[in-house]
Amino acid sequence: MFKLAIVVGHNEASQGAIRQDTGQTEWSWNIGLARMIEEAAHRASIGIEAKTFLRKPVGSYIREIRDVYRRTDEYGADATCELHFNSHHNPNATGTETLTSGSKASVRYAEFAQDRMLEALGLRDRGEKIVRTGRGSHSLISGRAPAILIEPFFGSSPNGLKVTDEEHEKRALAQAIVLATQDAFL
Ligand SMILES: [Zn+2]
Image (cartoon, protein in one colour):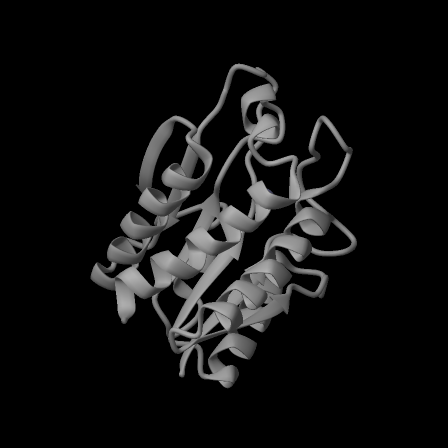
C-alpha cells in the first residue's frame, strides 16, 4: 500500500481563512475534504491508503509543523499533501495553485496535483510555486516524504466558491488528489 498522509492546514485554535459564502474556515472545510480523500482512495482500490493528520496548537508555529510531520513520518508516509484554501481582500483574485519544495519528487507531485485540480474545478491556472522560505515552506521540508501544499481556490472569490460549494464538487476535488497521487507515484 502506498501511504498518503493528508495534513489539514491550520488548527482548531487558529482556523485560517474563511469561506465568504458559508463562513466555514479552512480548518473545518478541509477536515471534510480530508475524509473525502480517505474515502476516495479506499473506493478507488488502486493501492493508495490515505490517512488524515491534524496540526496541534502547541504554541510555536515551527514546533506545530515539526510535530505533525514527525507523525506523518511515524506513519511511514510515502507522500504528504497539506490542505488549505486561499484568501485575498480583492474578490477578483482567483485560481488554483500548488506549493512545492522544489525537490524533484515534490515538483512532479505538484504538477500532477495542479493538473488534476484544474481539471476538477476549471479555475485559472496560477501554477506550481517553489517555496523555500516563509509561510508554508516548513510544511514542504519537515517530513521525509515528498510534500505538496494545495490552494485549490480562493474562499474570497465568487468563482472559487461557486465551483466548490456542492458535495459532488468537493468529492471531485478529493478524487483529483487521489488521481494525482497515482499519476505521480504508482
Ligand atoms: Zn491556509
